[in-house]
Length: 90
Image (cartoon, rainbow, N blue to C red; front, side):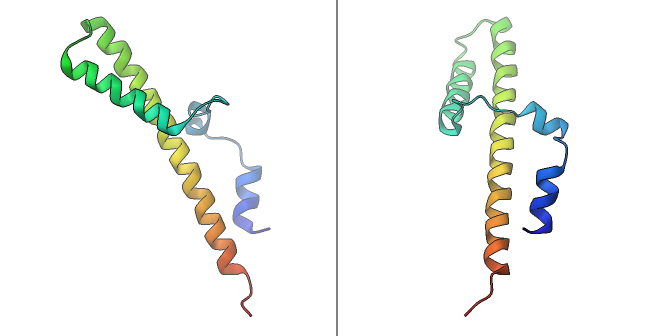
């Protein structure tokens, strides 16, 4: 096991990690679609001002979830690449 994966496994979750915990049924594509729909509603002026702020706040949280998801996926890809590079060649 590489040093990098040991650090990841034993380190405490950061504030960002805690804020971006995802429900079991969470899906990146569905969340992006929800964000896009919210933006369209706001741009078309379909929402009362009070709801605009609520929807905007929700979209920001969803964007944080997406960012956390993408960061974790990038870390996994980096680890896989590192593992491949560490394997002896024949």
